[in-house]
Image 1 (cartoon, rainbow, N blue to C red):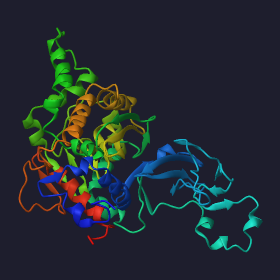
Image 2 (image 1 turned 180 degrees about the vertical axis):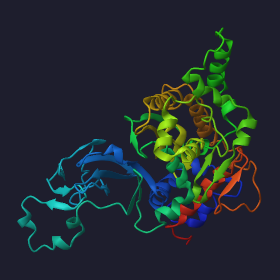
Image 3 (image 1 turned 90 degrees about the vertical axis):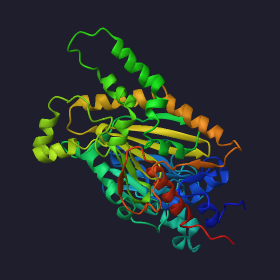
Image 4 (image 1 turned 180 degrees about the horizontal axis):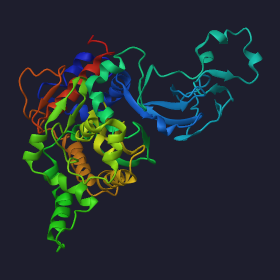
Length: 443
């Protein structure tokens, strides 16, 4: 057993009020414990129910290191189960998505299961007569994940049967999801195509932290967004030329420090938080013809203005997703190793809204988050430099002290200066809490 395994005190010692130890990013044992404890004790995003629109549809993914699948059952509900046959352990599906018909069939011995996981049939079942199979775990079929919640189409699961309830874990932070969904005149979203996937040679928490780091855009993105802005400004444009959609998307990354200070950061308990309390880089996009009228018809003018006037920037849902409500995007940071993270960037269609909104969302995703993006490479270089630099023995601690106030309470919602690192401290407060929730004390 290593120095951290099964030892809550040693994990807690990695987190200080204004510092975190480098091992939270680079130590393989700490990573293993995250997969075992953190990703089992928290509510983790699985997928969207529009990815399984028809009965028999399934989507396979992982929670931490646990292979799971979600499937649309004959009753119309979405179920989340461990992707493992209860007989010999064979993975039931290996394709990312598909339609299994009325049942799943194990490819090894042909045990079959209903799409809610219940055992359906076993070949030569007489071979189990008088063996007590009916009282075994195997007879119960595909093991369900501990707890599942479909929140307005977004499927979350908690691996551990015991733990915080969904509403307890997310609380008021669900307002960001609500705003993204309410931007549809019909109150529904649909996943628009497969995600963009981008491999990062760094720890997953670096990407999560970066979502509310507002002191880096004007520095790290000067070579990309800054160059684009200079080129646009240097063009000899006829009077009245409107800024193209691509420039509307990329130019705000070069906003000054004061812009980010004034936009504010809100933190919620359990590691959730968002930038853009008062305004954001998404606030000044051009209006889409006809969209506001559709929203007024659906929600009334006052409610439509309230929905569209909320332009939050990045909302982090701890542990590992971020959403952008104004452009209907979700990024999931999938930990593969202490120094390797796969990022998947999904975009959503606002059902009933003009197609131009989806066009802007797709453009943003390509320009900012794709492996071929303009902006994303800037962040990637910083992450990988940090992953390498943290192996330096010059210092062992990482500083997250900006705008720290002694005695700050992470169990309270707070709104602060938009360049605070409180949300990073908030994430590590939650990290320590959920890492040690099911871990023994030091012996």
